[in-house]
Length: 322
Ligand SMILES: [Zn+2]
Figure 1 (cartoon, rainbow, N blue to C red):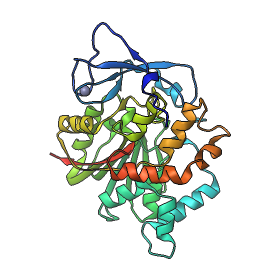
Figure 2: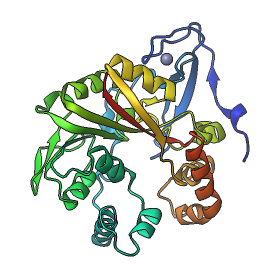
Figure 3: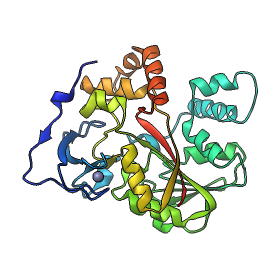
Figure 4: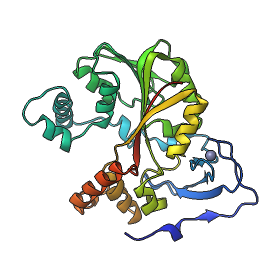
């Protein structure tokens, strides 16, 4: 793979900008990233922290909603009937031992479901809160496994909803009351400007012996090293912070949480999607099928290799109250 290190834009600034995660202001770099999901033609400056290695947006846009269009943002798009049936079968594979279940789990993995289900100790009475729940896809999967106490919170939905007993609340954690056994952030914590505050709020909602699960992109990854500004998980300006293993530890400390485990669950998409950005293409363009198929086996093996060696571009962080 071509080393794109030289092509990344590093800007010279009179003074080093402060890292919003750890507060370091010495020897930080400024990097400029393009909005690539919709090719809106805008660029955003990020600070790359010399101390904790977090890469954080410097000036988040005032109006964020325009970067999450209802017609295009994946977490709130309606799924087709066939896709819903496949998802239903896939979910059942997590709790049944029927022939083929392991094959379904292998080829249609659902890491959000698996990590939440395991964090709940497979206990159907667990109280679950999913932060940044989108259209409630995970909670619907958990309901299909027989779970009943399910709440989601999502700023992108316009009003509160009740879907067969699943409560979806419009807004953020400040509007949530109660106690939860498992609180999950499946690719949502990178969308907030102050993750320390959000994790502190989550800690206050945690039941005794409760767990927090954070799934988040990691800059300590083979994909970031390889693709740099074309790594598809940079996703400026929606992703306000690209964490490192170290910086997620910093925000956990600040929120009085303790990390019990970190794993990687990266997928081949980290490579083929970044290839598409490198080629100047939109992810939902007609060429997607070609890019998904090209190097399919190699990228699958490479993702496994990266995960085994702690350099996958997605991490699963398990936390408890310190
Ligand atoms: Zn820092």
